[in-house]
Length: 94
Image (cartoon, rainbow, N blue to C red; front, side, top):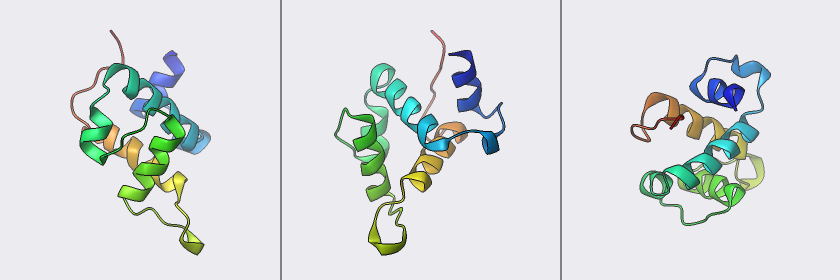
């Protein structure tokens, strides 16, 4: 859990992380502890982590070749929004 928190705040080099998995963990945390944050920022309405990531890709127009949604880009955007404070004041420890 400590490693996950360090990764979320950027204390672990992003080059060695799987951003897709990190974003799913962030979504899981936000849905549990801050349930309105994702719906307010991205207008998502799901409780499934992977579906939320897919909806974020749709809302933020993260498209790959062939018109499919680029979930890796959406994951990076979500993590960047979290780290920059665009999701609001969020604490990882209670």
